[in-house]
Image (cartoon, rainbow, N blue to C red; front, side):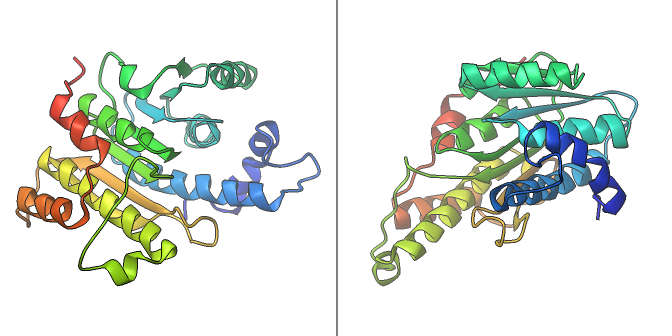
Length: 265
């Protein structure tokens, strides 16, 4: 495990500052769930970034960043524990929240955290990007985040979906299953992420989908991990995508973004 007992103790001060833990070390149930999620996500991030050279800063984009809990943790871990330079761009369209996050980062002396109050589709960054990640970005923000990774030519894209309000599905062959809301929600998430994975594979990414944290901490625990690399395609990707589209009548917003998008220079 990346976060051993000593590292976890070292994180207590940070969790107090970002208000996930009280000064007397009390953690509410809700905050315990948040802490376990971001620590598990950090484990995945570090497993990917430790492959990269330490001779230059790692450049990361957190899209749909919200309260930036994950990015504060990532920055603290690399600054104080790994002692490795990192630059993190946090994007969210909530201006008030971004101002608050910027002020907190200033107090923490997290000088290489930058905050951008804008839509993910409008964001551009000059230079190379190592990783783009999102944690529970709502609805089409998941697709926008993945596409930001693509158009920024990021080496690694990590995405954990949240709500999928813009998507619906239907299936003549699975009517008996999809009439149950619990099964319908799970199927929608599986099909949507499977279609996103196929789109990423068409663009030259090697994709894996897995549970990054126990379902005890969140039911929305499925991560799409994409690495930009050469790999042998084992499926006829276009054909498989069309099958899913025909069977479930679904079109993730990522498809539209890929069709109309341009790469960041």
